[in-house]
Image (tube, rainbow, N blue to C red):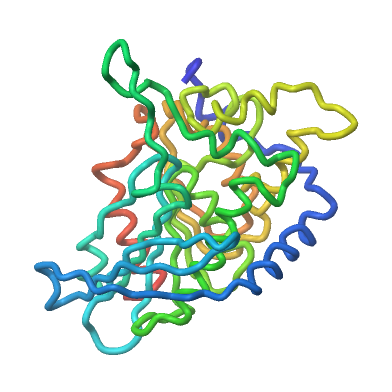
Length: 322
């Protein structure tokens, strides 16, 4: 963090929101475009030691722009269609591992690889002087597109969430009406979007959310890769042609908060240098739902790494009434 921040200052963060007048129609057009793309779902069984009590599949399906979305789907071998937790990882971070605790509960899990990540991730170039990968390098997925919102990376990711939920409805062994979305940092914004625009989501787990309330505090955290990538655009003076910060409002998760009516579990590390605590509280404070937050006063973006998984499991049990 550039400077310490108090809990009271965070708790009182309740920004006035001025959403774009055509926010709903912008996303409605996106959903109509997505409907024209066939899902083309594929499942490839992965043989592992747990195969007797759980089926594990490499899955794929089509997203906007003829992009193939990949993920791992684990379904416990129990009677009936299983409730499911969907995981969205953070920007430039690896996917989460399959979690045995959920399998033991009889809960399926789908781990999505974010668009442009995984094996197709553009790799950091090597510094010829040191032989090491260039530090602070990133692929610049966020560097362009705000001047033409249909091409912005976040629009594609958000529509990938909607397609993921549609994919689950078609999957054997899954109860497509019993879904929890679980996001880490940027993945939390994707989870909020999914719950805001579909009625199949029963709960949200939002760990150190980012891409919400993208104001000066969040934009000061240059250790965050997407902040760094967007900085040149956002630092340009607004012109008649385009005001980048106004364009960003179509994608800032805080503008979807009022639509959330289901239980949400947050985590926040008060020393987070990637997801600003004030941004997390802005999202939290604007939600009108059953919401709770696990606060870790001396931890950063990995807040609750040891304790939080157990809290998450209890939340899942509560939501799915297990």
